[in-house]
Amino acid sequence: KNEVEQSPQNLTAQEGEFITINCSYSVGISALHWLQQHPGGGIVSLFMLSSGKKKHGRLIATINIQEKHSSLHITASHPRDSAVYICAARFTEGTSYGKLTFGQGTILTVHP
Amino acid sequence: EAQVTQNPRYLITVTGKKLTVTCSQNMNHEYMSWYRQDPGLGLRQIYYSMNVEVTDKGDVPEGYKVSRKEKRNFPLILESPSPNQTSLYFCASSLSGLASYEQYFGPGTRLTVT
Image (cartoon, rainbow over all chains, first blue to last red; front, side, top):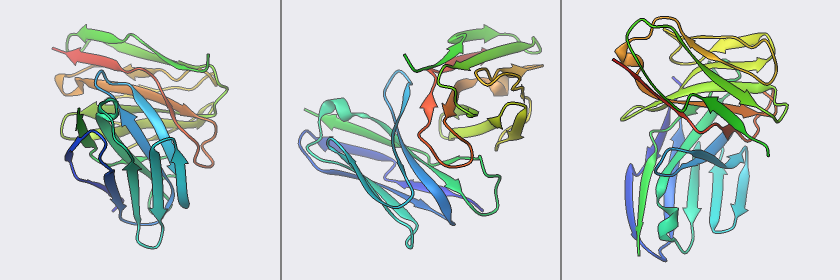
């Protein structure tokens, strides 16, 4: 069964802390997406990964294909980073090609 | 401005009254998709379209219909809405369905069915 699991479900941090959100998936994927959803509901795509590492500003996303695991890191966190972070996988096995399966999301709160 | 638009943004309706939520993108994207988001269940894919006239079921297609007659539009149709379809709906598009590209999301439609 194609599954995506995120941890932790809730994360509270103080401004300036280094944050890591984890995403594990069950079988082979062609790509993994990291999304950000701010209060109020809009969803923004942060990264799309098929291998290695990507960086954008204070955000870094990595993926380890062998371990079926991806991480999203936020350096020098800021209250404006408070949001829900969602990973989504495009599986290559046992599913139609265009389907995306989502993790449950991680609610991040950064206090000043 | 490159964007995905959805209408309406908010809708309250009654059980059984057919409704359509429109989705349009101006980026000439091939791939479009509909998702619903519910507390405790997260985002789930309803239907997707790899290109014009090509649609396929996601994980929760029951009670929904879609069509893709033009590249830019991908309406979501609820022929007989029920209260369990009360949800936050997102439309998204990406360049191609044949490989993974960044997804662009619409602003969401909050639907309440009484």
